[in-house]
Image 1 (cartoon, rainbow, N blue to C red):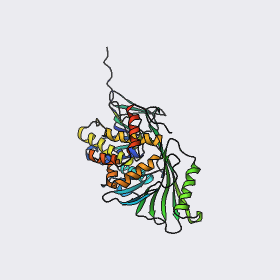
Image 2 (cartoon, one colour; image 1 turned 45 degrees about the horizontal axis):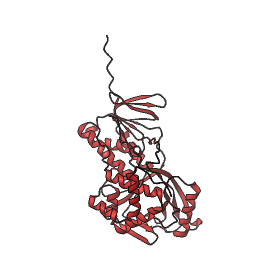
Image 3 (cartoon, rainbow, N blue to C red; image 1 turned 45 degrees about the vertical axis):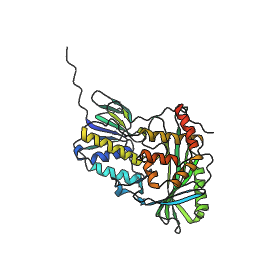
Length: 400
């Protein structure tokens, strides 16, 4: 009897499926780790990232790997709702925005400078599976690639369970405009302007001013379904006319941004078997209650690379997520889904009764139990108590 043929060694050390924010962030973090310089990395991405298809905004209190390509940085934010308006000095924090195209080009230049380490293949992965030796990826055209470990950032495939979990979108349309005269305060981000009608949902304006005459003006909602595009645009025009005092001939639109970010407490595993880690939205890195993802993606990349560099293996816990913050997200999603208009009151109370540094630490999931109690005591208890009851029963609230 002939012995079985030995299983061939995987062709690559690491296989990255997807070249968006999550895949490219991990690739860049790998490139910056000297102890992993000898590892062979394959990036499989179906599309050429040669357009500015999105922007990412985030706050931070420390230097980051992508600071040099940040499009703009601010040190003040404004919160506005009926009866309460305040501009906050961010102190040790800064608020930054990063254009997708700048990020893609920056990372690809870095990877291109290491051709012996990084290989790029234009293809779409149809199947990714654990094997005895590692992982195998099969593309839609039949190509097969093998590696010791894989990192999957494809959009998640979710089978909704609406009776148990909550499913919302953060959806928006934004216009980047130029005005004929000075209109914007380039020092202050209009973080949330809730003064408009809520229509039983959470709706606000968001403005990133790049100069006195140029800004991104965005209409954003938290709700289950997107609007017709013309409806977002109607609200943007109304804001430009009635809040900023701009007539139609006093500005021009130079760019447009459209998006919808899933916000759900549906379980999204960070790990699949022994050799696959999920990244980005596939691993729940878009924070369920706010939609912010970029810094959470960086934190996961740091965690993964640290484990690979120190142990040679994947981290047991790829995200380090803490259960109490997951619960806070679930409760706010439950309120948004049941009575979206209450969101305005909750955020108003948060900003009215807490220093902005505490709010950012809380949203970054870095607060102590004492600060968590301060945050929870600063908002009306009633909506949360009802949602706690729903959570304890394993039910998700439905829109009233």
